[in-house]
Amino acid sequence: MIEQTLAAITPLMGMRPACRALGLAPATIYRRRRPPGRKDAPPRPAPARALSGLERAAVLTELHSERFLDSSPAEVYATLPDEGRYLCSERTMYRLLGREGEVRERRNLKLTRFRGHCNPYLFKEVSKKMGKVRGAYPKEFKEQIVALHRAGRTPAELAKEFEPTEESIRYWIKQADRDDGLRSDGLTTAEKEELVRLRRENRQLKIEREIL
Image (cartoon, rainbow, N blue to C red; front, side):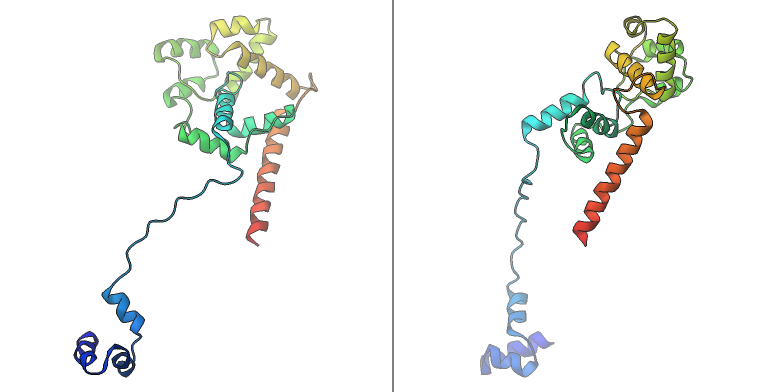
């Protein structure tokens, strides 16, 4: 109704006087008649601290290494600083793995249920039938491998008989020795978990301060 009235009186007195008479804003009328075209958002610039292609490749190489093949990004993030190395944040590790489609349950669920029996020999037979799949070994399975080593088996023998690599088994043995107080050249599992928790809290505090 208003548009029709405006169209009728505009030829008589002009657009602006007609708008004033009807209590309308000329800009509103012009926008209705000629709506602005939709503009695409400009591409988001890369952050100044973003990793380069070579740096991203280095992070993925470390995550895919035999040593960290069955470790979560949180474990990798807690371990590397102890060696004087820093590649990126834990969140960046997850983001890079997500681009590779690796942020998921890292082992076949059916095989994981067999591993829950904590029997390396049963696991060996199941692995032969189902094939290798990437992902984390259960804590109990690692403990059984360490127990076999302490009973006299070498890492090379265990790696040959079971699926884990010799390097992974040696790392489990070292970590178990640290947890049992037999080594003092690194953090225990409990200390690593506490370090991860503190770093997460520190990161959250930084975010909250930036918001405030």
